[in-house]
Structure formats: C-alpha cells, structure tokens
Length: 556
Ligand SMILES: *[C@@H]1O[C@H](CO)[C@@H](O)[C@H](O)[C@H]1NC(C)=O
Ligand SMILES: *[C@@H]1O[C@H](CO)[C@@H](O)[C@H](O)[C@H]1NC(C)=O
Ligand SMILES: *[C@@H]1O[C@H](CO)[C@@H](O)[C@H](O)[C@H]1NC(C)=O
Ligand SMILES: *[C@@H]1O[C@H](CO)[C@@H](O)[C@H](O)[C@H]1NC(C)=O
Ligand SMILES: *[C@@H]1O[C@H](CO)[C@@H](O)[C@H](O)[C@H]1NC(C)=O
Ligand SMILES: *[C@@H]1O[C@H](CO)[C@@H](O)[C@H](O)[C@H]1NC(C)=O
Image 1: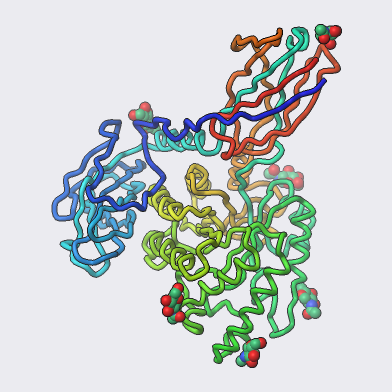
Image 2: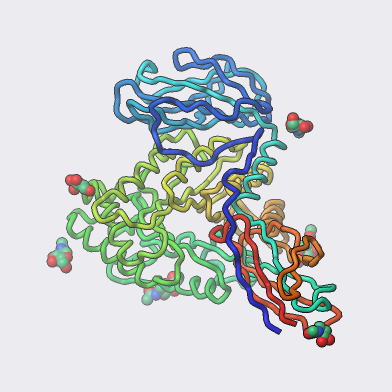
C-alpha cells in the first residue's frame, strides 16, 4: 500500500484570535502616529483609562501580588529623539522604573511597561526624560490593566497556543472500508522546535556523571569561558583550543547544539593580559582581526550562532581604541565569515534590571540599529541575547515583557542567554515566572540557563546536588523540559466528518489537535490488519501555518 502525504497550508487565522479581556499585544510598532491611536479594547476586567495631569498620574491603587500593565502614547515637543521612561513612585518610598520608549518629535510612540506589585498601596506614574523637564513631553491615553497571577498565566497560555503550536488535522482518504475501521494515527515528537538549553563548562570533560546528567536533558548549550579569547590565546601567538574542541565534540556526539560565546568582548577587563598592554591601535586591529578569523573559521558549520562583541552596550574598549565604528566593522567581518547564522549582541541588565540605564532595551535596540546601518551591514542576520542574570527577588514580569517587545521589534531572534538567580526562599517560583514569561513571548526563540549540577561549580542556580539528586530548581527545569515538548499521542480516525469523495473513496478527518512546533514521526496502524502500518515524518512549524492539514491517501 502507499501513502501520499501533503500538507495543506490554510490561512493563518491566528493573527486575528481575540484574546479579550486579557489582551496584550507583544508587538511593538516602530511606527510613529500623527494622532495617538485610541485603544480598541475598551472594556474587560481590570482595565482602566487613567487621568493624566502634566505627565503625572496620581495615586493608582495596587494590590500586592498583582501585575499591572501600563501603556501610554508619548511625543516630544522640542527634541528630535529621546528616551522617555515611566517611573512608578509609591508613597512608601518604592521607586520602580516601569518601562521606556525612544520617543520622537512630531509623532506619537507607544510606551509599555508596568509593575509586579510587591505591596498594597498607591503610587504615582511619572513620565520623564533623563535630565529634561517633563514639560518637554506630551502624554496621552494612559491605560492600566491589572491581572492576578492566574489571569497572567492564562494569558501566557493563550499566547503559547498561538505562537508555539499549530492546530493539526489529518485528512485520510481510504479506498477500502475495512482498512478504515480501527485505524489509529500515532504521533511522536522527535525534536521540539523551542529549546531550553543550559550552559556548560570544562568540568564536563572531567566528570562522567556531569556529562550523563547533561546529555540526558539538554539539546542546546553555550560554553562559559572556554571559547573566550583569554582562554584560546592566553599567550600572544600561541592558540590553544583544546578545551573548546573537546567540549564541542561532546556536544556533537550527543546532538547538542552550540551557540558560540564569544568572539570578542568589549570590556577591557576581560581581554587577554597581553592585549590589554597593546597601545598601538594598528597592532590591536591586527590581532583582533586575527582572533575573529581564527575562532570563527575553526567552528564554522558547528555553531548555530555567535556572540560577536559581548556587552558592547555597557562597554566600549574597542571603540575607544579603534574608533566609533569598531563593533560595526567587526560584525561586518563576522557576517562575511559566517553569513547564515545569527550574530548576537549579548547584553546584561536589559530585561532583568530596570534601574541600570546603561543596558536598557532602548539602548540595546539603538546599538543593534547602528551596527546594521553601518555601510554594507544591511543584510546582516542579527540576534539579540538578553543575558538574564536576575536578582533574587520578585522579577518585574511586565517590565521584562515590555523589554522583550522592544528587542523583538528589531525583527531579529531574541534569546535569553545566561538566565540565573542567586539562591533565595522563592528562587523556584521566581525562576518559573521568568522562564514562562520568556517562553510565552513571540520574539523569544531560545533560552539558555546558566546552571548545572553541584560538581560543575554553578553555585547560583544549582540543579542537582553532589549525588546528582535534583534540587527544587532542578525539578522545575525537568518539569519545563517535559512540558515544552509534545507527549506522544494516539489519534483515532473517527467518522468525525463525512465527506465521501468520488469513485468510492472514503474520506475521514481526525479531530483537530494542538501540537507543539517540532519534528514528528507519524505512524498509521490498524490492529486488525498487520499490513497496515507505515511511518512518515511531519514538520509542525510556524512556517506551516497555524492551521495545518495533513493529507494521507491509503491505497489498501
Ligand atoms: C483572579 O481573577 C479571576 C477573575 O476575576 C478570579 O476568578 C480568580 O479567583 C482570581 N484568582 C486569584 C488567585 O485571585
Ligand atoms: C480490503 O482490505 C482487506 C483487508 O486487508 C482485504 O482483504 C480486501 O481484499 C481489500 N479489498 C479491496 C477491494 O482491496
Ligand atoms: C592547551 O590547554 C590545555 C588545557 O588547558 C592544556 O592541558 C595544554 O597543556 C595546553 N597546550 C599547550 C601546548 O599549551
Ligand atoms: C598590521 O598588519 C598589516 C598587514 O598584515 C602590516 O602591514 C602591519 O605592519 C601590521 N601592523 C602592526 C603594527 O603590526
Ligand atoms: C562611522 O561610519 C559612518 C558610516 O556608516 C561614517 O559616516 C562615520 O564617519 C564613521 N565614523 C568614524 C569615526 O569612522
Ligand atoms: C540521592 O542519591 C543517592 C545516590 O544516587 C541515593 O542513594 C539517595 O537515596 C538520594 N537521596 C535522596 C534524598 O533522594
């Protein structure tokens, strides 16, 4: 017997899914409006239009544990372009930076953000520009929407349904009635599309238990220090890639994808010692170009992305030594060496710590825009790495979401690249909040946690003790790994819908099922017919469309 398989792409209905009353639009239009658009969602639980007076909204009520999403349209009066922030000031001295946007003169931009309330009380919302009077800003249409944890989670699940899954329906065409009866479609996910990865270090080469622990869980990694310049060329002219090579082999033998970290680092502290001593810019340029060529050619085809200039929003060693366009020039060289994989700008305090203005989402976006607008860089495949070293306290999920919106508006993949948190009583809960927030954001394409078992020396986020028994955070990670891949399932072919075709063909549809994106093996069997058993592979990906129909023709 033979099967003819085809996937019919149906219209993408997902984009018009109505998610009211928990509506939140994760896109961030970079469009600038001549009139501030009125919100289309006027009702819904917890939704409020706030009254603004001279850029201040006074006395907003908060309830501890709830999440408040706040948005406003802002415009500059005189300056052409400035970062406008949202400061949330409580009567009790709490001062939270809630979000920011690059505002412009002459048109309105959407500022999104908010607060995860850790107290019950009132606060004022103040719209401000660093060092400028508030009179320079116009603000309109301030809205606030409150969510309890259950509602927030429900809303995340609705987004996950839309962005990480397709609704798949099988259409079966039989020639023979007896082949139909009792036939079952079994599906098994071979490879999930979304990967939750974990950093690894050289200790994996010394401990079989660490290696076994790692390879039984993760399919994505990045090395901590073993691919850094100071490791690979500690002595000028003497390159040594032995650790990185061995770790790369370990990863490849176990089908684990590797994101390269890092070609260069813009912080002077972390240059090889001999590099720090170089004073001649031409000499520095020569050794840097040599470094880029050396590491990128060595691992070409073996890494799935590169951090090119680590932390180049916070730091500027190469710019200071070689000129303002240094990073842009190095990204240009990197993209010539490896044009097909994303070249990441990897930065800290972008999603995890709002008060560090130096690595803020607007600044990271601006830096990436500068890099791609440098002549010849227009076609670079960029990427944004948000490190995610969170402080041991309740993360501000709505700030994190608005930061991801800003980063995502570049159109490049956004990854969380080094997620961790120091130990604290609620570490497990906070880590779960962070990871779920990232997973439910449409711009996020991967997460790498900065963690390991005790023997690995990752002391902040330790997933297993010295006997490799899971810690509570270890249980959390295992739970999410399980949840973010599809369980095997059996789909009965019922007389779900009658639609018999021409020439005696029997056409049946399976019920529509929601499948996480990934690669699958599909097997069709009929217990009463040994001859009816066949397998084929199926891709369920975003590209296939949210409603995917798979056609099987059974000539039995
Ligand atoms: C959250 O809000 C919903 C809808 O108002 C309500 O049904 C639910 O009980 C609330 N949950 C909590 C934990 O407060
Ligand atoms: C239908 O399938 C049954 C079971 O395999 C077989 O015995 C029968 O010959 C088939 N009929 C036709 C018309 O192919
Ligand atoms: C290269 O590095 C490895 C690991 O640190 C070390 O064992 C080895 O001796 C080094 N090789 C040379 C030639 O220095
Ligand atoms: C830098 O490299 C160029 C080309 O190889 C060479 O001509 C020049 O002398 C080098 N400069 C220094 C300071 O080493
Ligand atoms: C940086 O590059 C831009 C063009 O992309 C150019 O206009 C500018 O002069 C360059 N700056 C320096 C310091 O080289
Ligand atoms: C931890 O692991 C050891 C060795 O695998 C095992 O004997 C022990 O029962 C475990 N302890 C707990 C608390 O699970």
